[in-house]
Amino acid sequence: MQNVLVTTTQTLEGYRIQSYLGPIVIPTVGAGNIFKDWFAGFTDIFGGKSDSYQNVFAKFINQGVMEMMRQAKENGANAVVNLRLETTNISGGKSVMSIILYGTAVVVHKIEEPQNRSEQEAAADA
Image (tube, rainbow, N blue to C red; front, top):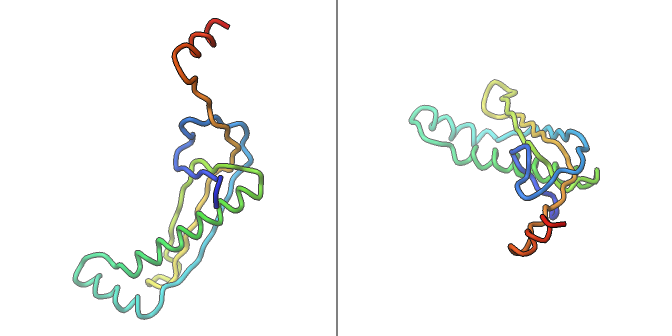
């Protein structure tokens, strides 16, 4: 989704927030599968990271961010600030997880910087 900026900060450097359009909340519930659970069990015993779950988790987050960008654009925003996410294991096991992404949809405008010193001086003299 082009033309929608997303940041975890409350502001965007080089941009001025013109208006706040409100929160965007994207709940995602997803599941791995029994094979990923089985292989992740070895990781629990022997240590290390579970690439299969890491990939599933990253996929859910990326899809959530894309949905957030789509909703922001539909509501007239061109940016989302203060992106946050929360995760919860719903099933008590490894299979079902909840990811909630939330942020604030805003309209921002790029701050135009003077091109050179003489323009800055002219602006200060005006």
